[in-house]
Image (cartoon, rainbow, N blue to C red; front, side, top):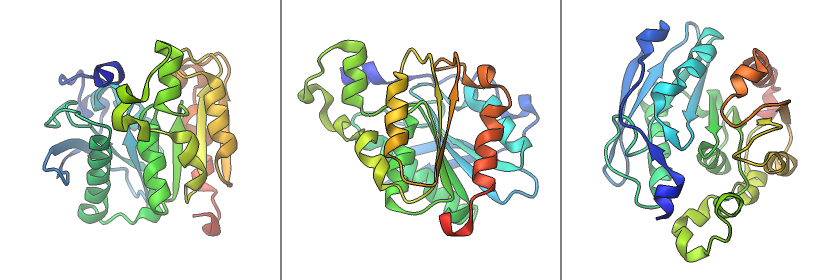
Length: 253
């Protein structure tokens, strides 16, 4: 039951990289539990950094192409990956640990197949994707992480939308706790939050930011909701985090 409340996957692609003038390479990798995961690697010219993008709980990678195009046009390569059951990725989500397997497999592909050092990787967590960006950043150092509309925990966001959520319903999705994990990340943090987010209460993003280690920076988007931040914030949505990751001192990485 909890899975159908948390995830809304789509198998159908609405667009493709070529529709946005993007050069692409299909990424296929296998998780430790032998599930094939698909994504698109979108290289930027003369790129030193790569954004590993973990998307939110609805749709698939095709609807994230407009964001990817903006990053590629700014000289940052992007790897968009779909969790199991989304897009062309095989399998279905059965438990909270499944998506950790998926995101670790995508990271491994980026490091091993594209020879990109973690010090050049920026983890991007969009909404529920923030869980995986934060967790990976507690395990090793990356160039930075960018969090878009992160929540504190699945339990607390569930209580916001569904009332009391007993632990036995959550199962191992109790592991999705950004509030606890954020203080343990080993790299700089940039956070974007809309002030009128109707899905994730803005106070959650503020708390995540307060608990994050330095260096860190936050972009609060006035009148921004959960799914319109690029439109409402305009160029700042990309320029502010780009400036942050570009100006990091070597000692901060």
